[in-house]
Length: 386
Image (tube, rainbow, N blue to C red; front, side, top):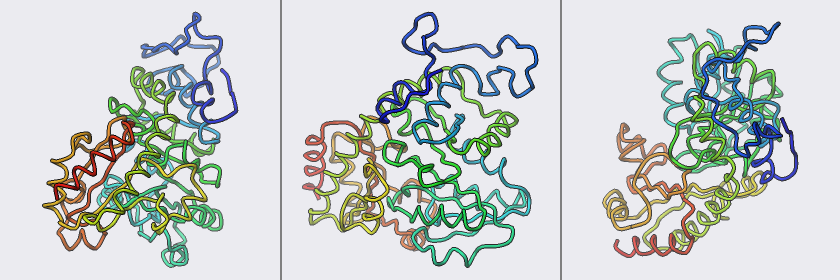
């Protein structure tokens, strides 16, 4: 198996691959086999078995993902939530405490709020850009600090360097959800995060046709996660491994196109009188711009914006544009838009949504790889109807 260095573009194609290819195959075949012939002297967790995530499809993916983030090890899972919950179950015990960033993916937030207590776990939420306040919630039983590279749906960038330093200073496990940035724009291991996780459904695969996840980081910590996943049964099936592996090959070209188009859209939206706010770290007006410019290789394909006309204007805009699809999820080749007040945050009252910064006129955009000029023209035409 090769461990080829070079740029991330080269690593996406070659890192971790089996060379020479099996029977000369350029593309890695799908190993649709539940079990494999045993080798004398193997321990239980070394036996090749689909549930143990050690088929050739799994091991190639793991090696490639680790190389992409300049990390030591990786494992793939059945979903992003499988990655998240397996991390909690493998690294925490009853009585432990976790510090969370206060703006999180809804699934993570709900699990912490609704399920932690059943497992004897506790947590507190802190502002990601206020490191001076984090020690206020620190306890002797605190074991982990958990943040996101870029938040959903307000696209905020926390003080990630301070998070890693805080974890080191207090002997905490540092975990970051790197889904929005992808390894193309940010590699958490380079600033000493212990673990990075992804909903591979999004940018890693990039084609809106599978659900998968990944955990990447320090070898001893990933080993604990993988062992727990073997018990819980969250192994990714061979065909999904194949699709994720294939999707990764084009990650860099997709993310760069998406990032470029997102910046062009953000600039257009910021200049339009119908738009009251644009959330995108590539804009100098954004609170996280300096931090994002220093840490990231690109600003990503996610943005959100608020319309002055509120929910009615957001609905009219969604109906007027012709290129975006109104659908959840993100990171695919097609541009998607959602109205968080009607989807991810629909369970909150208007006052509660206002408190977390989700206005009724907020629209979240996952920018695809369509032509930049076409997207800008379509958004301008949509705004002209308001």
